[in-house]
Image 1: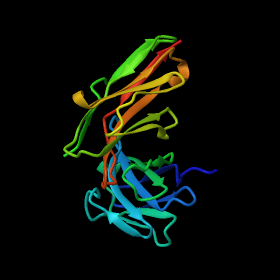
Image 2 (image 1 turned 135 degrees about the horizontal axis):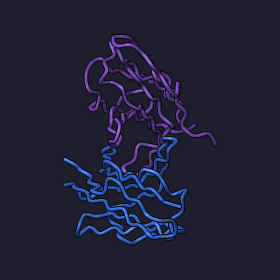
Image 3 (image 1 turned 90 degrees about the vertical axis):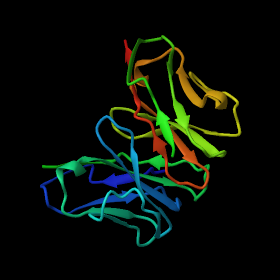
Length: 115
Length: 114
């Protein structure tokens, strides 16, 4: 079956612009996660959804970052007034259910470059 | 607070050699889960294994094996008879029961020299 997909694979934007990053989870997975990976670092948690609601958004760095999942499937990460420090790979993951033992499966990521 | 330490930033070995990647973790929780992921040059994180804190049995899967020791808070990963396709960045990660966040280490870049 299909894995997690993310679009676009690469996004180049100018400082101050608005961007949207999309994630399509594995079919049937109810939990969805966003992480950010800077060069040479491990992924860092941003937010996760159970169904349509954001169950934990404690990793979002500031109010320029926002994510939605209106129908409980596809999610969009939105970044307003982008800054050069936002440049990173944004990873999306999904899991079958909300369970402490559950395994998260990751997509290929979107590489965001802010000039 | 949770923390995962992968002290080896980069490792290079000649093909067919065995190699062990170290992972040390910190958590105050009694129930937790440990993971290893592989990130090849393509960038996608590939799930390798999950271990529960209450199961300290070592696991072997083909050329891969994992040694989980709660006494030393370590979850080390060994590749035997390494191959060029094993070249990647490997991440160890920790997740506590009831907490959905994965806490990752900084990764170990493994290069297998043909």
